[in-house]
Image (cartoon, rainbow, N blue to C red; front, side, top):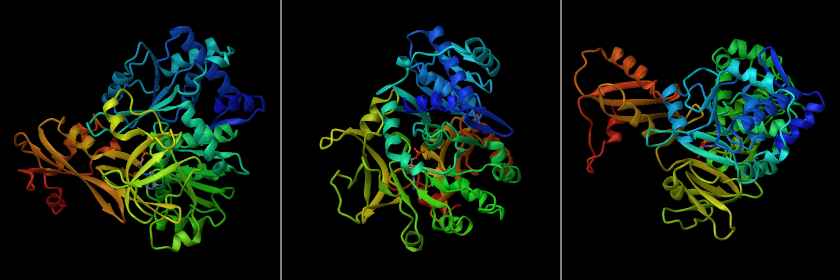
Length: 499
Ligand code: AMP
């Protein structure tokens, strides 16, 4: 696999793979540790190729575990610390891992769970061993499984194969060319935008300049750190750049070697594109689009002056060379240029489906007869003009909140697990075309005698046991009953009037 070959090649050149705060890891160390982890997996579990679950955040030793799993022919399942213990255990119930690495002692369920100390022991004991290249994950083998919000209230797994990633690499690597050698590593490994750095950045021998949650919450510290970075490529959701914009320090003086911003995952607004053009006049802004199911991204476009001044939204881009797009109506008929409909992606980057969910796979994935490639119904409403594609929102209840993918029903189904809540309805609250926060309305099973503030805090705490913090609604209001529409369903339009 290209990324494993690259690690070996750069190991011999003495390059730095990772910088995290005041520490760094060379490619040689990454190569040695990933071989050690792979050797341990093979010795301990033999032929069994069950995916390895890794729970943590940006700990340096996560990467050797990810690449080590691939070297041993296994997929890895990265689960970020924003996922609470209960949900991480649900993921383990789906994956049934033999081996797991738990950087935060959250109580993962697997035949063998390594904590950071045990992992160090593995690196020491197996350090120096080399795994035979023929054992690596390849072709249709799963490389990773990412768990994303699922409308049933349980996260759903999206496996991506080695061949899918190889295709992404062929298609998108030219967009990651640069004269510099430092790329941002800010996105959690459990979100696929991180693949741009972890696969394409590493394949180019770049240094992953790592930012954790703590730094994101402390802009002063973040900017000091960025100021020392020699960063060439910024990869993030637009939301992360938007968080940096309020600071006057966020300019090309802070990052003079920055060549490009690569955005993915949510709407890039005119406001942000304009702001970046002012503050980083020499840096390109590249917008990309794609769902996890089609391996990170399937479009790209450099945003120019004309696009910034056009009243239409910023385009999501041109399909990458091998990608076919179709925009269809609700009966699956292809629509003409300019007409809005559901975007279908046909590409070798479309993954095999949902992990252990043939029902969901059948609904969203298909084999395209014309090309013989796999297709995916995105649920995104789009139109095309002069070959450029534009995004007009979702056709279902999935939203993006600060760059995170959230199914509204996931929040509702988990709210009713909280003590004393019988029903729940959740509304995304929009401003400037972007979701700003979630508001929830609930019915109580019996009066609780609490003030609205205390009740809201108690429900939020209860919900945080089941859901990542970014999915917990900011406002929670108890009502005596829900307004119903003529079909007898909760009338969310009426509820919105109560906001
Ligand atoms: P995820 O699987 O988390 O990457 O989320 C995929 C969804 O994010 C897509 O189906 C879109 O709804 C949305 N999305 C991704 N990229 C963009 C973009 N550049 N502009 C607008 N929405 C986007």
